[in-house]
Length: 245
Image (cartoon, rainbow, N blue to C red; front, side, top):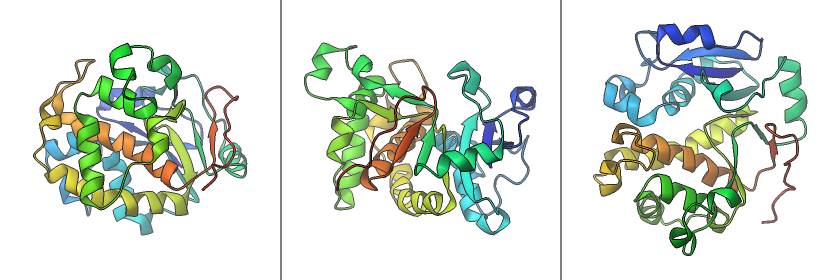
């Protein structure tokens, strides 16, 4: 199933009706079960900090109630960003026979890196995009990984494309691996008192979602570290070969 996240009742009319999709309310007002086994989502600040990851966390914590062979996520606003849409569950299964992760929220980072010549002289790829739009994020990310004795993959500083917006689908075992890997890092990040969390993003977004923006990059870091095959469904052109270890 691909879970289409939304916040308010009036957003339900924008949800897709095709069988691969199911709406998932991120707020108790539209989903009474969202906090089940997830005390971190009981308060508004926790839900805002994690945004779509709140859906991931709920499913992971209640995984015995979900029989999906694959898990995917998107937003009620998807059509504002891409026209791609699956037509059937069989189509999803067929796509996943040829890759580890299929996504429809890719960004061409060669174009993004042209925004700021000064910053691009020191950072490239997803690292540049993160720091430009969310000042201070890279120091925060690097500190999270350093604290766990890890380093960010070099590809995070050089990739020409990356998958954003939590617009992706992958098989059950990979979803479980991502959650087991990411949640310990996120717990540390949520508890940390870091200056990044108080910085307003370049596009004016508020600081309540600061961790949500970090979590979006954690997904990119995870698939790079796991050396996974990805398919770009937004253009039908980008399907990178398996990365060498």
